[in-house]
Image 1 (cartoon, helix red, strand yellow):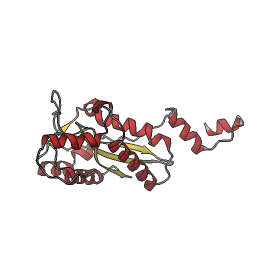
Image 2 (cartoon, rainbow, N blue to C red):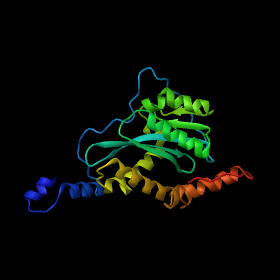
Image 3 (cartoon, rainbow, N blue to C red):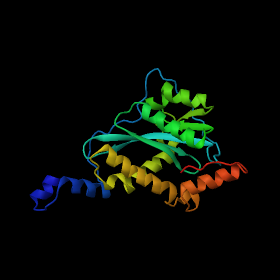
Image 4 (cartoon, rainbow, N blue to C red):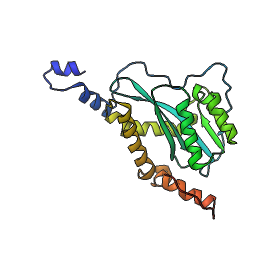
Length: 226
């Protein structure tokens, strides 16, 4: 597209065209990385959320991985959110799809907020790995997994990815991992603390998380962590 516009007499560079295409939702056709590839021999778990009324923080968490298009290549982002309030509890960026960065995010979330009752993910190899499932079992967390090919079983994380990409990722052409980490971090901070959420009556997720956690655990002293 850059070459085509140059041939038409427009003084543009590839970085500008990439940014404008992302703003307009125009993406080139190429193979995108599969972030949910199952692993043979790993145990999977049933989906526990069908018909479940989720009405309080830390009742259900969800985790998922997406790819971040860079100036050259991809990075991978995992996020853990509270299902009820949509608050992002922890996240990590990696240049590989090994389970380690997912477990690091899980450890951070549990350390800051305590374990949930249920953790829901897809059946990707990171989430069926021993390191991930063992950490959950040792914390007394029930494990739930989406049905194969049913991305809507984890719809709230999918909506998070859509917002992140259209409001942040597609507006940049990051060169380095540190640039991507800083950009994603700023957006998640804004999303948690300031971005109004229609399902929360226009309030940001962090405000609702702590308000409703206070309501469900009256009289307890806690150190609040954003």
